[in-house]
Structure formats: C-alpha cells, structure tokens
Length: 375
Image (cartoon, rainbow, N blue to C red; front, side, top):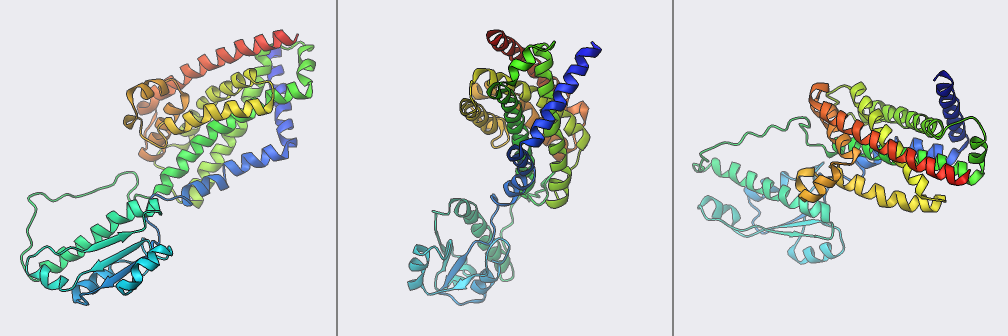
C-alpha cells in the first residue's frame, strides 16, 4: 500500500513538472482564472451601462425638463436635445440607442387627467441595451410623471404597496453572478483538458510504453494524473475566488470559501475522471479537442449556470442531474452567495461523490482496456 501511494505521488510530481515545462498550457491556466474571470464579469453586462439617448422635446415644459434630467450616468449618457428631423438619421448612423419624443401640450394633458402618449424609438440591433433599456426608460418616465402630478392633484393610490428587497445581491450587479459562474465553468474545462492532455501527451511522446514496463498499475498511472492536475486547478480556483472575485471585483462572499473549495475538489475528482475517459476514446489531440467541444458545451449551457434548471424541459433536467457540474453550480451559488453551510448543501456533495465514483470506475475500465491493447 505504501509503495503504491509513493508511486502515485512520484508520478503526479512528474506530471506537475511536465505542466511547468509546457509554457503555453501554463499561461492558459493562469489566464483562465484571472483575466478570463474579470472579463466575463465586466465585459458583458446584463445591466444598462451608458446607453446613448436623445430627446425630441415638442413641449418645452417643466415636466419635459424634469424627464430630461432623470436620465444620467451610469445607466445613460447625458441626453441630447435634437429636432425630429435629426432623429431617424442619428438612429441610422448608430449614434443613439434610444430617441424619446415628448409631444406638444404634454404637461397640460397630464395635469388635465388625460393620458398622452410618449414615443420611444429604439435601435433594436443593440439587442442587450434595447431589451433592458426600454424598461428603464418606461420606468423613469412613469416615475417622473407620477411624482410631478402629485404636486397638482391627488394621485390615485394603489391598494397595495410593493416593497422590493433584493437579497444576496442588493445592487443587482450581474458581475457577481458572471464571475462565479465563469470560475465554475473554467474549473470543469481546465480539469478535463489538463488530465486528458496529460494522457494523450504520454501516448504521443511514446512515454506510456516506458510506464508499462515499470512495476506500475493502470490505477496508479491514472490516479497520479487526477491528483496532480486536480491540484493545479484547485489552487488556481482558490486564487481566483480570493484575489479576482473578492479583491478586484469586490464581490461580497457570504459563505465559507474553504467549504466551496472542498466542493470544487470533489467536483474535480469527477471532471478529471471524465477527462481521462475522453482521452481513452481519442487517439490524438485534435480528436480529443472535438470530444471536449461535444461535452463541454452541454455541461456549461445546461448545468444551471446560465439558465436556471427549473426553466429547462423536464427531460433535460433529468439528464443533467447525472452531470457533476449541475450539482457544483447549485452548491457553489448556495455557499458563496447565500452563505449556506454543509447542512444545506450535503445532498449536492453526496451526488457529486457518487457521480465521481461512477466516472472514475468507467475511466479506469477504459484505461485498463487501452493499456492492455498497447501491451
């Protein structure tokens, strides 16, 4: 037993040395858990940010001026007052995303109790801004009109007041969500790539034959690749959570980072086994790359990180229940955002452990078969 553990340790150390000499792959690991996380959190935002808006003001009243002053950074740029003849040209040139037209006698109609219409023209080719921003504009205009009307006449009161409290992300900042999901996706991606590439590299360089003539078992060879590559990804994951997410992005982590890393280590056991299994199916790195595309896309898109599992068809939910990433996403968000402890996320830990054991067994069977064919 002691000799077997020593073999696993020394073989794993050899894998770490091989990774250290592979500068391209090493740089990719560093990038995936630093710049890639920061870019995913900040570059693509689901919230409105400095959207250009122009206003055609036919009323020139106190109310229209109040609406104009309600649009300001960071959601919008300062509104530009234009003539109606300029509106279509500016939208065609892409200079404005929104063009708001305030009709004549707008303030007079509001005070008279009539319901005048305000026209909003939207450049819908800017899909993300157009979809989110239209709601922002409607809310701002309605709020300013209601507040203005209260000064002159009794406003109708709703029978119920809605008080909104956003828990776990009070500012509704999507960068919080995007950073953590990107870490989870990169943990899966890098663990599969590193372990699979380590096995295929042995085959392409001919060193796998050297290992076969040594007193080593397929279990020891496979376990060494799993612990060494899993350790690299786990350390990179911890660095990303503490330095990139907490320090650079100022994301408020509510739960235990150590508990999250424990879940990440368990997930790595499953995904590194998956990487070994895929590497036994492929003969070359190009084939392995194609297999990764077929596996990673469903894992990342259907695991609940991008779209809640509840929104997916029932058949997809049942299928993804067998994927370790689905449970990792659930426990990761529960721990980091909602401050969940082991008492709340133990079912996910158990599910990942069971799936990991199945994947490890399947990968070991495939690896033994491939080694036997080479012997």
